[in-house]
Image (cartoon, rainbow, N blue to C red; front, side, top):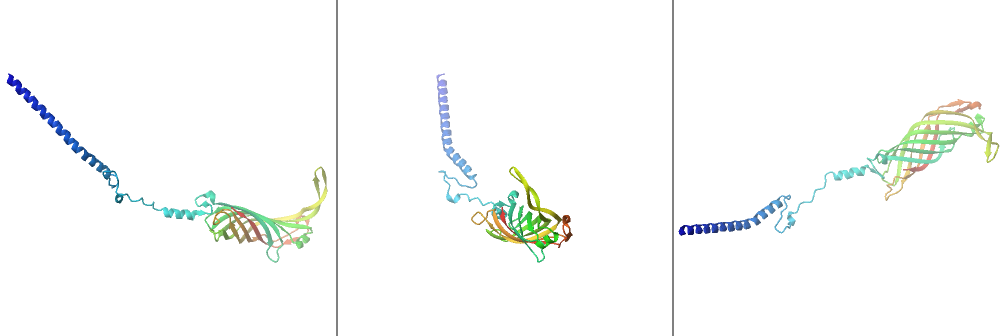
Length: 294
């Protein structure tokens, strides 16, 4: 009996020693295998970063750095296209900035040996759109006030007279040096013209000043005739751009000369009972205009 107990105790001791030995062996193997797994894992992480090599201390060799990102394709073409569409303060794709306006005034002289119209003055206003650097399309309103020659006034039996011409025309304008601050241009067009010829006499006229009214004398229209017709104009001018180092501002001073031909018909009439008056066909003028565009 005592022998069986001793053998049991001995067997249990041997089993415990064997279990402790296996546990120590397992801990030793785990301690040796953990750095390898971390290194392998770190290596696997490094190899996933677009080919960049990660070494143990975390540094990256200069020879393994990624190449610089390539420039986007078409950037040069886009810049060139934007430069081509840029015109003195506006971009070609901006419709509002394409708009242009003008205004000016000056004098007009008769053209031709048998002109029935003399010197006068007038003004011009207009607006339109810049199609590109060189070409603009304008719609213009012009008003001219010119005197009649003495021979025609005497023929009608009046003491004075004038001609009023107003028009709406379409006038393309072509710039020869669009990138220069000092530019030359060609302009011309055609459209609708209305001409009114009036004769005046000095007539009694009532006038009032403060609390007093009386009778005076002033020129009054005693006869007139009119016509509606087409016409055209052509000419050129000089313009100077303001603003910017290279004159790229939108405001421009201009001075221009045009040849104007109103296709008015020949007329023989007695305006409002005046003497018989004859006027040849056509009204030819040379308007000179100074003004600004923007």
